Image (tube, rainbow, N blue to C red):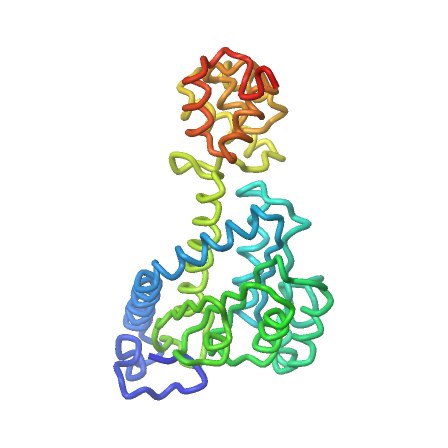
Amino acid sequence: MSVLPSLETGAERCGDTSDVVTTDEALFADGMLASYRRAFASVAAVSTDIRIAALRLAAIWRQGGRLVYTGAGSSGLAAAADAAELPGTFGLDQSRIAIVLPGGAVEPFRIDSAAEDDAAAGARSIAELGDLSSDAVIAVSASGSTPFTIAAAAEAHRRGAFVIGIAHRPASPLLVGADASILLESGEEALRGSTRLAAGVAQKAALGMLSSLMGLDLGHIHQGLMVNLKADNAKLRERAQGIVVAIAGVSDAKAAAALREAGGDVKPAVLIACGVAGMKDAVNWLAVAEGRIDEALRRARIHGIKGEGPNKGA
């Protein structure tokens, strides 16, 4: 079922909310919930596409490439929100993440609706990023035909980027022109003409899966825990300690000591808490294991966890 610009589809509309008296909050709420269920179902239907795209993102990141998020309106805000959380959640280098929105990224939460139609601005904003041949661009548009986003994606593709298109209409320009297409057939909105509700839910879920699966492949998730988080406030420092306790099975005191020795970095702190000789060995084992805690511990145990690390004799 399409989202915009064609609202009439001949199919069921959002739990039949079109015939509900708008003052009946309970019925309208039921219609919204039904549309949200369809939104999640639309993400589940393309989970394989999302997983494949995430593996490509992880490969691009490993090779030093950048991640660029672009979109306009509500879709742009969803893209910006996902991008903004990556440094804190997965410890990704903020300088390698860019957000391209109409009017620039200086005020990402100020929506300029008219700017969505400025295709030249979309292409220009991407062009300002220079060579994109090592980078990935994630472009989000509910209709799949927003001029700014289409032009940005096309310019990114012209500059060699791997382009992931996320949209809600099959065969829309964004999906046709993308290297990896994620079609979210979330259906009509309960609030007809809006794309911030069901479409927004589907976009946030798809983007969250995309970036989290990338984080998993990079080794930044272990046992469902954020093992590469940036612990830059009291809450996150406490969370980092809890992660070391959970994975290493040690006391709070030992976890805190390991984190101090590791300078607050969770991954080496886990290895130190598990018995690796010190920060140097922990870092070396993680490098050999491409950042994966389980593989680093496995290798360390094979060679004697209190040994001199993978570079012994080098």
